[in-house]
Length: 213
Image (tube, rainbow, N blue to C red; front, top):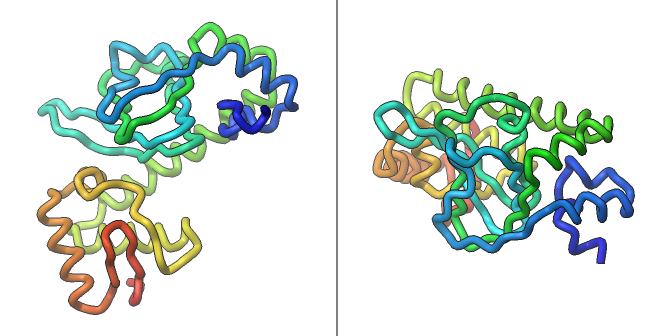
């Protein structure tokens, strides 16, 4: 069934007609992985990884071994195209944060696809632009002088992205604290302060922004 195709979930491939999608699907290797599995590392970056079911996170390790979360991954997200195109992966990792189904496209097959399908190459460029924009937004947040301003700006970003004053945090608090450059304890305390001051109403990972800043 077309609806079961892994590649149908991915913007990089879902513009292809169904026959082309099936051709690409035959190149894909399906794999079930458990929570905590590292599916991409500097030693294993020769493939495109697609999330069919489950969740993951992309993070870097600093020279001191500290994690810096860059992106949450969910169904239909993919990672690895930059490294397959020749950029060295020196310190990036992808960890699945739930039991997941992933689809893997090897380097040779990926290269052949973008050489033979110009529309895939254009989609790849659009995806790279989106990734660069996300990193730019994170850099802007990290440029704010304190965690209160970073957190408020981040919540306002989510309101715009999700189109609602009630937003769902895409990252666990541990990963969100890394993304915002603080500790889980400090982040939890600041969220409580925002709730006590009437700026947000929080229930676990869902937050209603009552007074945007």
